Length: 475
Image 1 (cartoon, one colour):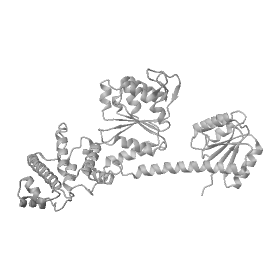
Image 2 (cartoon, helix red, strand yellow):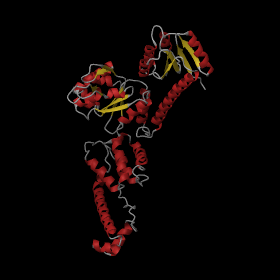
Image 3 (cartoon, helix red, strand yellow):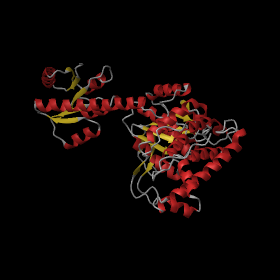
Image 4 (cartoon, helix red, strand yellow):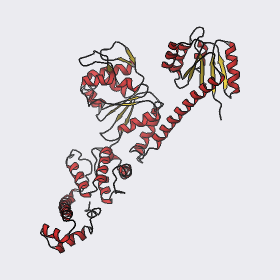
């Protein structure tokens, strides 16, 4: 197992010598520097040490300034501050800058050893969490990861490659096609995976509210601003900010966002302090931004800033081979949640799903499966597809769920089945009211006892159980 390496930064030769001997005896690899400038120079080269012991009082560049620069160079390496000056102010400043811990000289060997051990264990735990997030992102069987479609597999590979960069990514596609899934995948695969993922819907708020939501405001910026409020860019920190429906942003905010992308800074509404942007920007849209640019609705310079990398998610109707797998995935995902007895979708419903054009894409498919798990009535499921098909006649180039030559047959069957379903419910309700006295039920319904028995036999209702359902109509 590789030994952890420690860099000692102290201007006193006796301290460096003592720490090197003690830490070497503890099994660590040790190297030493004697000034702040040397520390910064060493931390600019690879391989980096696993931990830094940093003295505060050094000639030239002091320890606090060195700490600030080290965190800028590589925030992942833990730094333990050592000082002979027991100053609360120095402690607070060091911790704010990201010091892992703080020790006042003189300290006990056991105290130093325990502090180093704790700092290294925190780093190990953080790395384990990050690796687990990556593994979950790679193996999570969501509507993005389980696809066998060549285009989706290629998109996944591109997303993996761009994850480690900090450039903006513009993700295109119809509503419900899975754009946000790609964005979350990119975030999880990146080095920012353990940082916040903040989503902002640019179409959900009016212009002035969206501006304050994105950039925050200082107290007194406008009537009702009774306290400071950080914006989403601040809350995202070193993570990722997702700008959903970016094509709906007003020209005023487009200009401000362009400034943020160019200069990596902005000010809150009513504020004078400049805030540095550290978050990565991902943007989603279901609009064709090239057309919006040509119409003067979207800034060309902002478009090129956002469009460093673009990924276009195909609609579900162009990846029909994924429909059965996705439907099965959603059944497994929601079956226990809804306490559904459905183990798999009926074959005829699945065939209708495969032939349907899905204007709402994966989100619509997911909702259709959820509804069927809650109300497993195939007639209602067919009727829903038929209704949605009629409401989306603009999709003339996509196949409908049912061939036109069979539409009149289909409607007749659906009508008959719906009538029978209603009759079944009336009979069941009457049976409940008569405590399942069949002769009394027949009298109430004004039908013969034999007719009632035939109906119950047909519906497989020989007892109080309501579990059996009507036979499915042809698709």
